[in-house]
Image 1 (cartoon, protein in one colour):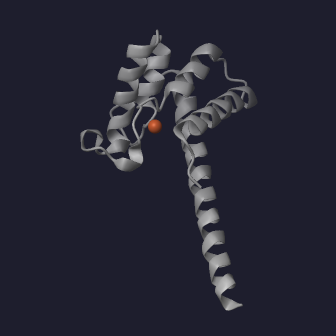
Image 2 (cartoon, helix red, strand yellow):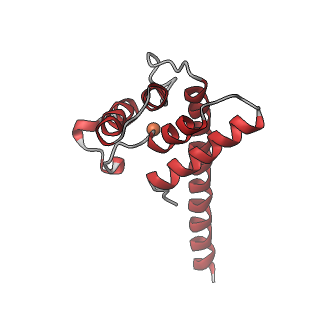
Amino acid sequence: MDTSVYEHSVAVTVECLRIADQFDIAVDRRSLIRGALLHDYFLYDWHSRPKEHRPHGFTHAKTALGNAERDFQINPIEAEMIRCHMFPMNILRIPHHRESIILCLADKTVASKETLNGGIVAIKRVSSSIIGTVH
Ligand SMILES: [Fe+2]
C-alpha cells in the first residue's frame, strides 16, 4: 500500500498533536500543525528519485524548507521543524524546539507504521496468490 505524501503529512500532524496532548507538553499548536503539515513539502515524486534530489533521505528536508519559505510565511519554529525532521539521519541538523523534537518522533512512528502496513499488505497479496494457485 502506497501512502501519499499528503496522507503521510496529515497522519504525522495528528500524531504530533497526540504526543503533545498525551504527555501534556506545552507547544505552539499553530506552529506544530503547520510545521508538521509542511515537513515533507518537497513537491516531487521521490519514488522516481530525480538525480538532483539524491539521496532523498538527506536532501528532501532542505528542499521542503525552501518550498515552504517560498510559498508560505513560516516562522522560526516551523522552519526548524522542517529543516531538522530527519534527525538523526541528518546528524548535524539537531532539533531544539519541542515542536521539532515531537515532529521527529511522530514522523518515525508514522513512517514505521506505514512501512509495516505495506509489508503486511504485500505478504497478504503473495500468500493469497499462492493459495489461489493451489486450487
Ligand atoms: Fe521527511
